[in-house]
Image (cartoon, rainbow, N blue to C red; front, side, top):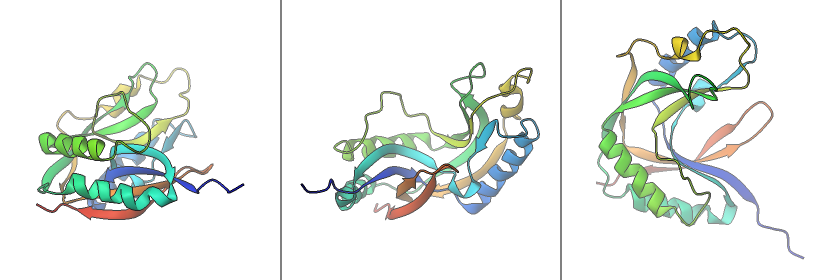
Length: 195
């Protein structure tokens, strides 16, 4: 009996520049003053990214074909600008599970890229019924102590607050390795736009 092929957990994303990550790390430190202890698992600043598609587990042998699909999706795309702005929680403040920072800027180009990635990579991974809602996950709520003020009071921030702007010129194929301490992300391939 032959062993099953080795599988890895992958996703497709956009990277953030260090300056934006540093601003988001500062926001995380500010929010930690409201929730001390381990009620929230904070995303390490160097791993904050904008997910275009979570693929899930695939065979290690499928990585080259998946990378080729991502290259097809990026072909013809022109660079565009995004910004990290505003914050909130999913699914809402009554039962928050994810703390996020919003994404603004050229959302038409971002949506077009995400649709192209989704279409090109459909043969792999999990299906997603939810619509694409671009965001940057900064923390995952494990439990909130009773008596805390609503989460939105801390996460909403000033309405026009911008945590940084950046130019998108490539897509990343990423590997995610799960551990008790959280996920570790490594770049499998950088796919530049070829317009």
